Amino acid sequence: MYSELKSQNFEIISVAQDTGGVKDAGQWIEAAKPEYTVLIDTQHLVTRLYDMVNVPTAVWINEQGRIVRPNEVAYVDNRFKPLHRLEAEEYLAALRDWVAKGEKSTFALSESELKQRLAPQNPDWALAAAEFGLAEYLYRQGQSAASIKHYKEAQRLNPENWNYKRQAWALTDAEREYGTNFTKEVQKLNGKPYYAPRRLPDKK
Image 1 (tube, rainbow, N blue to C red):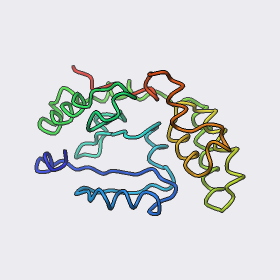
Image 2: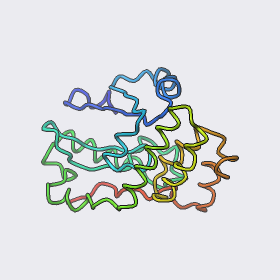
Image 3: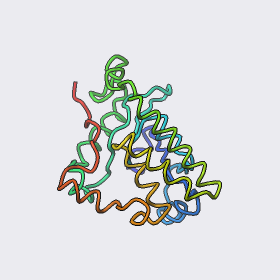
Image 4: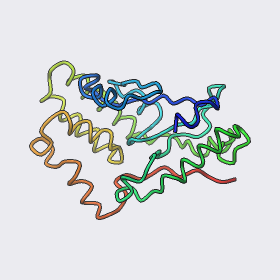
């Protein structure tokens, strides 16, 4: 996608949400050899500021620094379609249209439309973010055991946030400490998307 569109004033900034930093995410970034900018967010600031609950999620930002579309599911192919039931090409076609037409694109939201999409945050989600932040702090201080109850509380307060779940499970023995793992939780959904997807691009 980047190779196709970079000549049209299009840039990608990819941000890995990974407490382990270069140690965990770095090898995958190096193997991919991306042409675009890739960062690692060890404090999960991006997911907190943009209210992201899973990956991959994308935000469209124009040349003036204004959000044109808030965070949405952004798959580049259909390899995980059995899980999320979304057609990748619909999103990619909308992205191409925006890059080509800018603000005239049928998929670029006006300020009023954007405000309608950006609902006020659930108060419990703010508490969940605080619990997750505390858990992350304790983990980085070498207090892995003490961090677990705060990871669990973050998951309880915001059960829709799979970033909280996957990060916590990756840092310990998920079966022993949480009694579950990613695969088991997906299987419990019996074919439903494993998280509530953001709406696909609107057509005006």
